[in-house]
Image (cartoon, rainbow over all chains, first blue to last red; front, side, top):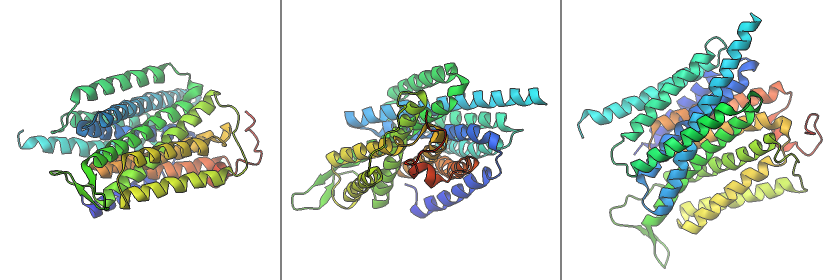
Length: 97
Length: 295
């Protein structure tokens, strides 16, 4: 099991990373970046897989199954939508230049 | 199981975390934005593949079935939706992520509850062979569930509003007080679950209150403000994922979730500022009539 303070250090460093990484983002990228970060928290699907893999009672199995279903939807949907947004972004930029 | 196998899984998780951060970095610059999502996508594939081979997990066939069903549904809906409907699709997929985080919390909490026996005179003991969760684990599972459930139901309401299914703003006197009371009630039950007794019925009430809070927080907000609200729920889902990552002891979830939580919070502020609004104004200022909200 993860040591409490180690997790706290990871949490702190990751929070600064997230903040710094997008600190100078132009306004036109706001929505694609929201969508892209929406895809990244689709990593929740692996947590749901672990929860389903540990489940014992039918209730836990059902919740875990729904969790994996939703998590997969988050990851795949987030990827498809972000990809389409960024594609459109490139097309419109090339037309302008 | 051979010795090197767990290290390969850990290496995949590490690479996934690295690819997520690099991908997000590339997505924040116009010239490299398109490649960024690809980097993050490779990271996601690595992490899911590693988890499929994680030793000691049961129900792998159900796992695969849910993965395939969720993938097909999201791929199909994401492909066919019109470009103008993108913000509500982000809301929908974000809500699914919040729901998944709440589901992790739910499965773990009900699991804890079924392993703890409560004595009549107060006090508890755990079933033999069961390692009871620490207070920090319980608290983070509950907070992650609360945030995840709020993000789930709130995002679904945002999706419904942008789809035009809920086109009226739902406002009544004392709404903020009612919302605050619902939040306080959820927190009180959460505290009782941690320090009092871990009871399945109370867990269910906790989830119902959390879901209700998300709906009631989002209903009064007008359609023009929705992108900011969706961005806020996006950040909240990231935070919920990080908390549930701690509960499961998964570093990649903590890193990816926290990065999204921090980046999403900053992004929410930037979006609100681009609209000449403050975040507080968007969330709580919905009682006055703002321009562009008539839709």
